[in-house]
Image 1 (spheres, rainbow, N blue to C red):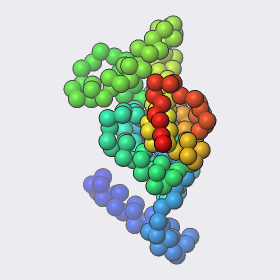
Image 2: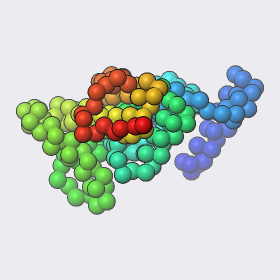
Image 3: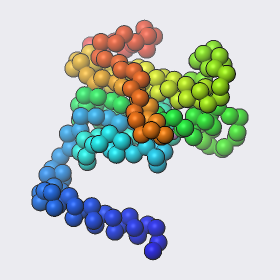
Length: 210
Ligand code: CO
């Protein structure tokens, strides 16, 4: 059987399974979505957001890109963020990176990979910001793991610097922004940092709202 046909067959089995638990499962799901979480993760196939968090359809609003980047000119990410914060009114945003991230690994190298270099360049900036700490780590694998963590940390702060988040922090004391790292070897999520709505961001990034 061709591999893609397996997916369509599995879909039929999944529908049957859901309906066996609740007859109206899809009727209720089709009504509306009220997710409490925005998940921003890596595109890596080994980090499925719902599976690793035990969540069901309807619980996570999801954006994934290579190496879970927050880039302030990325209209895809910005549109997802605005919709999640202003319309869905999510309570939490989770930026989830993962150890062994190919994007971070390539950013650490000098390989020329074409277009993707432009995207990974942002991780080289994270490296430069934390070069002193990173260059002090002799073990290459540990340095790689630390850059994965610092990359998540920087993206969390970049979210806090957006006007959407600043506005919601001021008016509605949400969302909380979490930085997590998924460990491919153990399956566990490492809870790195949390910014609450009263966090003071660097002055230069602050906006005045009337
Ligand atoms: Co990755």
